[in-house]
Amino acid sequence: MKKIVTAMLGVFLAAGVAYAKDAPKEVTIDLIKGDKGAVTLPHEKHATFKHGGKEVVCKDCHHTLKGAKPAAGEEVAPCQNCHVIDTPKTVDGKVAPVLAKMNGPKAELKSVLFHTTCKDSCHKEVKTASDGVNLTSCNTCHKK
Image (cartoon, rainbow, N blue to C red; front, side, top):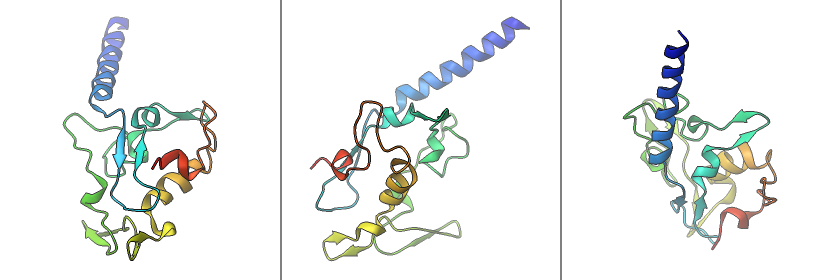
């Protein structure tokens, strides 16, 4: 029995390692044009982050996944498949919030979906990274 459990654990760990190899180390988010520039998201740091004993799982950000992490062969859809600029899009009978409302060439800051998802949901709670970086400063994420 012990050998079976050990073998199963090895399979699960190998599946996690295989996923980690496929996941990008960084992701550039440049869907919304603004004064502060694109965001380079340290994806690998987010994917291995724990706060208060709670592990961040893929579904925390990629809400369309069926499970906590992508199943074998499951695609992680890009945000812009459902979330667009200015006009909400209906997907599978649900209205997807817009990426941002534009006021001329600039995005209205309070309307930017990433601000709500990232800043309001996580960065306000986890204000400082383990290396001392201020996670509430605009310039931490936006490096123009």
